[in-house]
Image 1 (tube, rainbow, N blue to C red):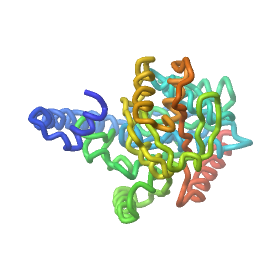
Image 2: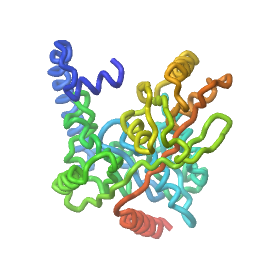
Image 3: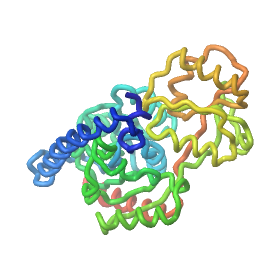
Image 4: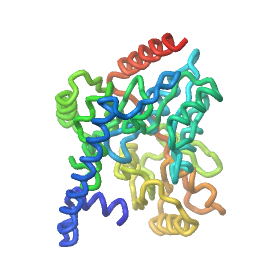
Length: 353
């Protein structure tokens, strides 16, 4: 079952007999998963499972649902805001497909930080501190990784689907119950321009009911420019009224398509692959064929996908292929997030000197 079919199944959009028969089993599996997660969290809360404390400030940036919340753009933005006298490193798991896409994006966009790739976050923190002298560790996708103590927990929540259809995996997309947000210090709502103000207000109210002390900031995924084959840079305005064929292999493909529409381009056709999809030359040829058949002006993808497909582009085609560069832009409470980070870092670094 591919990613799109799975989402249709757990969202209830699939009304086939097979789908209706499968959902009770998913709910049963989710109940078992819930028992495991709750037991694990209880053991950490009661200090019955060991928590390692690194000799550095640790900021975790994670999520409470699986995939597609916009976590990587936030890691990049906050990492680049941390400057001297701090020495920063990003701890990322980097296993399986993550090695080729998310890690590559972090390397390209965080030139002043060391990128430590290790599925064992403890060993990764030891390497960052011992080898590079890092005193600030940004733990990518770290909210559920409780073995490493963190001084600040920031959670990204996709405003277009904040609670992953309201059910735990595999019946929904929740990695933990919503009550686990009590551990968080701050939430950054992403893609806020793709929902109504009333929806945002209700979401914030609900989050505050779970954790009244939670700092909540709003953000959008802001398109900044386009990079095409040959490293040619185009302004966003040059895409207005252009006919686009779009493709991506990310957790939330609809958000990417909506961003293209918001810049004034017309999507003639699109193709969505599973998150972290490994493209083949055949996939690229098929994409070009569809774009040419539809008479598209451009083929657009994400930067994460671009890192994987560029080696597969062996000849120049009639339709230019490019990626849409996206940055996370705060629309509320950026100053409060910045102050929270600065206060956390100053207090922690002072203690470990």
